[in-house]
Image (spheres, one colour):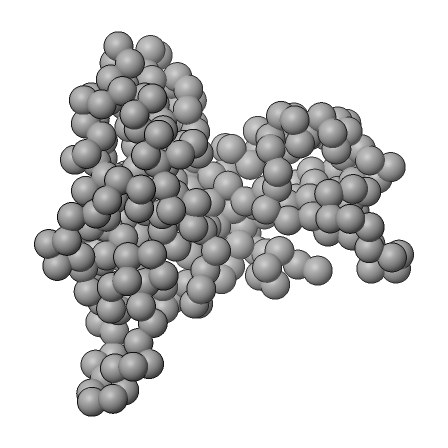
Length: 249
């Protein structure tokens, strides 16, 4: 079974880059959502966490800190990506901006306590040409649009908190997926899980009875963002092949 029934194709990366380029994610507005009248408003898809209407922002609402942890972990699309972009991006961008304001000059411990584990934490991001030796960077994504946020620390405190472009995020996704593949090849399932954590998906050979979800998988999938996935082929509890694919929604 394919990862969430998505078609995995490499042209996804080129498609997203051509659409958004180097512009920060929240700098462009999605196409307007259709205007519904009367009782049709009941058919609107409210944001599942922020409870905003499509194409609406937060209207000045100040979010509780606990919301950011929910936005950090809520990655499953409840609508088609096209509709998610139209309906939810404005509110999720405003939520991301609030997060940036909240965490500036805060400690790593505080930030992780309200937002949970970052998708990346470490020093210099070697996949980015503008990342210098000595950098201390964390990356987050928020909401179904996966608004990308970069935090830069100095002496344990967040000095910069900003969104960054889809192009940079695609570069990161591809680099991270290749990292996973390089580590996984030749390793056992147990070693992979210990190093990379639980994958987004386990798959089993349809010709055999399905065992418990976390034992004897036929393959494993690690999604490194909206558009990239590392697929690990498993034979006899060991990764024998690993490849990076783009995801077309």
